[in-house]
Image (cartoon, rainbow, N blue to C red; front, top):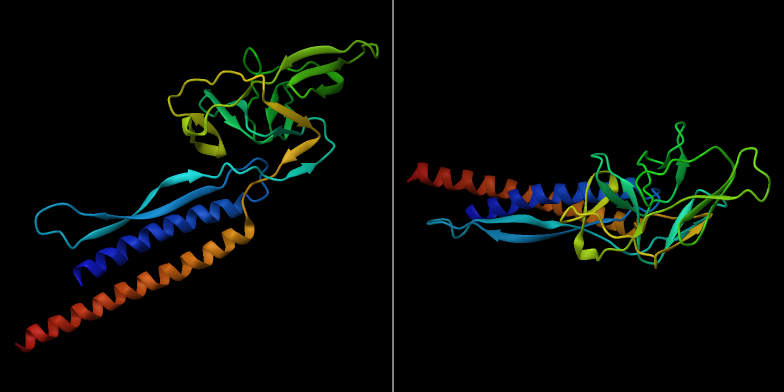
Length: 246
């Protein structure tokens, strides 16, 4: 009974956390470049004298899926999709460098190139400031060229170059807003081998059908764990009655 209540109680708690992670994935199924959160469970026996029967259930940390999402043709010049491995460098909420696969870019009212969620896009020397332009082109290597307002058709000027990086997966960790950062906090070096395609967006890599099935499985698991706790309570009440009779 002692072991039953510990396994059921901690299992229900961690199942709720897993359910939250799956719900987060489903909520971002239409978010460009989103990487699905992955999770697993493990048993964690409690050490100490007199506690060998007590076992906690714990999430074994959260990972993320590196599978590429599908490519969606948009025809919009400022929509970019990274081809193969690689990341786009942006300025995170704390001002430090972070990485994303979301390529739906825009020019802010102040003339800064940013993502759809407001992170400033980084170039060779920091955030990219855009001049007023009639036309913009993004090359496969990340070069940004514009035709400034009032310039002749041959007056194309290069503005900057997107900072594209490709650090090893094991060096990256997930942070807020679906962004990633190197575990050691150091900026990654630009990688000239990373390529982009303009007029496309990489969609979320969440598998909707799989996530829904997982959500149903977690719901049933939670119900089973609650029933186990109820059963442990009934067993405790029965044992108490027997003690009173004796």
